[in-house]
Image (cartoon, one colour):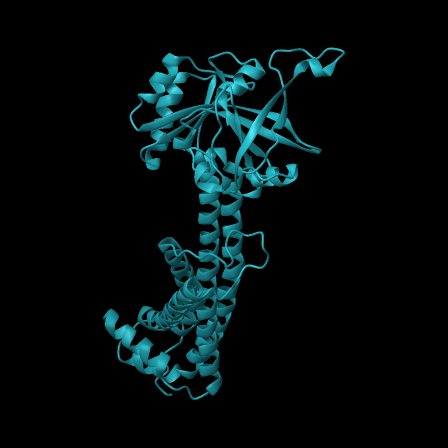
Amino acid sequence: MRASTILGFSWRYVKAKKSTNAINIISWISVTAIIVGSASLIIILSAFNGFESLVKSLYGSYYADLKISPVRGKVLTLTPSQLSQISSVKGVSFISTSIEEKALLQHDVSQAVVSIKGIDTNYLQVTGVAEKMYRGNFNTGNADQPGLVLGAGVEQALGLMADRSLLPVSIYFPKKGVAVTSNPSDALGMALANPTGSFAIQSEFDNKFVFTDLGFLKANMNYQPNEFSYAELSVHDEKNADKIKAVISMMLGKEYLVENRYEQNRTLYNTIQLEKFAIYAIFSLILIVAAFNMIGSLSMLVLEKQKDIQILMAMGADRSVIRKIFLSEGLLLAIIGNAAGIILSLLLYWLQVNYKLVPLQGATFLIDYYPVKLVLGDFILVSATVFVIGIVASWFPAARAAKQQMNLHN
């Protein structure tokens, strides 16, 4: 029997009025559950995609495409020759060197412990921090007249406005290579710098980081000309970052650690993926509940259509054909539910994007509504899940129908 004929029988059973109204009710309950489950799963996954894109864009403003750091210790040695070799690697756009250390900032009576980062002029080419300025300008000055670009949280902790401060900020930081004696202050350096601006990316950065001139920090912390904390790179195409990473790793050797953007934030990205998987598993339970309804409705349909099964067998249909008819009906119910769920999810997505139906509560968020982003892979995943559940749910009633014995006396 042709597949089109089998589908014809299945479609007729789907839309035909049943002698027992309960069968119709249970069938459409199962379809409704699939609609709700499919739409909910797609919308929840799209919300996770939206938050993931938002978080990645925020973290991407601070982290470079590639980062070179020492495998052991806090000091990275890179000679001008090595920096030149790295810059000449195909695909590398810019390279920036920096020093990062803990420091104590004091302004008037206010204090804050921060991570102070001395950067060179290429830093603005490898990160997007300058694009997130909240107040003033991204100006770190020079070795003789250093400037401070503060995180918005640090600015608030110091009780100043970075672009209007009349008093310089006192910076206390450890001196490299100086042993702690009976007087701990001998191992500390102190310098003054003027605030020039503040940035706002995300609280993790805003409450922690301060930027200043690399030469200024080197001179005050006893760093040698070839000594740094990190080297950060931007690449022409981030898709090639892993290839460029491999080339640079081979070039520098085992004493240097080269990380891509994902590896710099491995914990964050793994957490996002784990949460997304957990949500997928939880909402799949709705579809499993729909499968039980489908099993019930198809089992009752098999009982109702016993005479039809007998007639089909008398006409020469074998057991595999009977099984395929009822299996196809279950799949049709699943497909109808999934298609309607996709349409509903697209409608809800459009309403959220255009009318912000679901707002975010609180004033600390960068946006005031739940971000959503549709990804083709989510539609494929949800559709495949519904398809598998539909096959499993339909198999048992279909197998039962195929086991019916032909009785010509009925």
